Length: 125
Image (cartoon, rainbow, N blue to C red; front, side):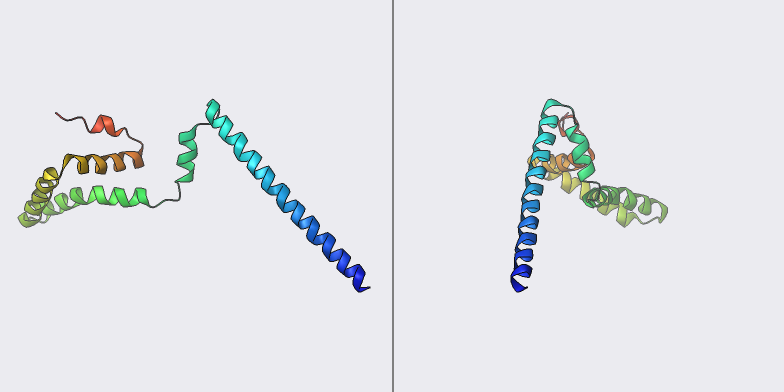
């Protein structure tokens, strides 16, 4: 009886291992077929990236970061607090004095998050 149970256990384990290996092969084939479709242009790569990033909080963080100067400016106007306005002006003066490469990186990151072309935004006058 113990030999029958042992044999049944080995068959089950063997069957599970075989199924796991077949699943890995099928997943690998599916990834390959998907990559081939992207290469041929049948699937839009940008749409794939966009769907992967829907659960990301970096967009919200960047939106808050970019909105803060506007909110502070509005607060300085409606609260009649000239100190906030002067500090905000000082902030933009300091930001303008940062190296061009840092400004380009910052604008490029923001542009990439929102799907804009940084090269169009960074054209200098």
